[in-house]
Image 1 (cartoon, rainbow, N blue to C red):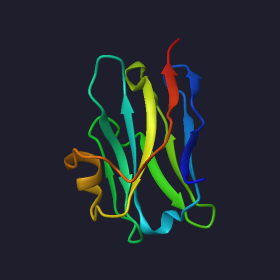
Image 2 (cartoon, rainbow, N blue to C red; image 1 turned 90 degrees about the vertical axis):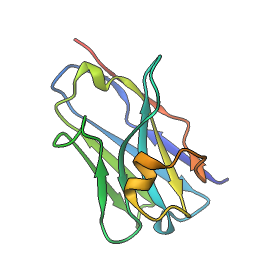
Image 3 (spheres, one colour; image 1 turned 120 degrees about the vertical axis):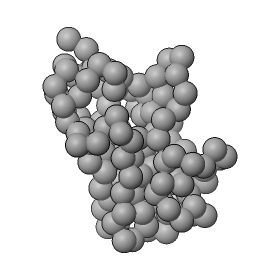
Image 4 (cartoon, one colour; image 1 turned 30 degrees about the horizontal axis):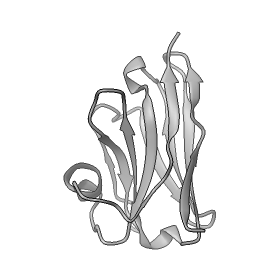
Length: 129
């Protein structure tokens, strides 16, 4: 079955950390640009962070720069999002997506408004005291 599965979400206090995982099955992530997106109730979807296929290029939204780190482990067919210094405004459902046709991380995260090849089902992140 071809799918992306996110995990690692949960409830954390402000200032805490979480690491989200996005595991692919049925296809190889090596050939895809991968992105993490989030959507909070009543808000538009936001491209949080994206990572390129092979050259290590990354993109971060201004709202998470310096706090979040994206990485990929092609051997495990998994992409991670390390989230530190979490704030209540980071509360959202986080999704990962993969696309084989988009070529830049900026396009993946901030410019493309169409569909992606693959979407995960999402994982809830709640930052609250």
